[in-house]
Image (cartoon, rainbow, N blue to C red; front, side, top):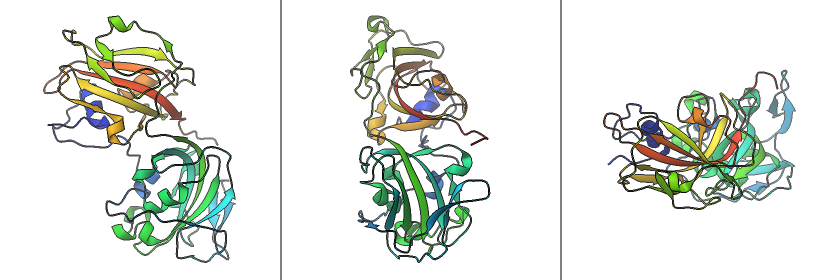
Length: 327
């Protein structure tokens, strides 16, 4: 039976020709992002307590374009997971299950050229900590929102177990270092605004919402409800946050989805929590443009071919603006 990962839900919602065993992950970022250069290793070791010290660590500098980079002049590879705190934030503590919204730059130890930089792209990225290399996860757990830190990651906590990352120019024996600036965190079970304004009459909806506003979405299609003949979007409750931006905006969603007969169901909580998608890459993600953060949205899609009709309930829990050419 096809699993209803967010990508599979998206396949059904956009009525694309997804095979019955497709398991793509919608949280995968473009190849220029840290999702490729900081992805999880299935054989990752247990958590490691980082050493908090600036001894031997590189310093933060700027390149000719004003982008943040690391300067290794006088630095010495510490041979361990080490964190230098450049600026300590005053926000909440980061937990291992959080999704973190960060700016960052990564360089092979001693290199003048970054292998990845959100600063160059002009927009932060967000990652589930549990999906990153152990060095990222262990270095950031316990840090505070608002902090900017320098992280040195030895190969065994980076790409050594994976034989390096050829696409990023990282060898299996390379120590890698990052500047990471933490802007925000989202908890895995983050939900929409509990004070969102109801915009729809629940009695007239084809679904029953089995969770209150402010709780992770759950839904059931009502018995006898007429299946949709076209894609339908209903803002169930309007949040009080900023409106989701246009093309290139990353939107963060908590969801629940079900086939029309309720025989297949899935939710983002079971997939690790909040998921992200990019506006401008096609339905259903484009449908969130202009909808305020904190809102709850119902998307119905008709059956087509082997894909049954689907009902999906989304909570819009956050966003990162699209990249801009001018910083």
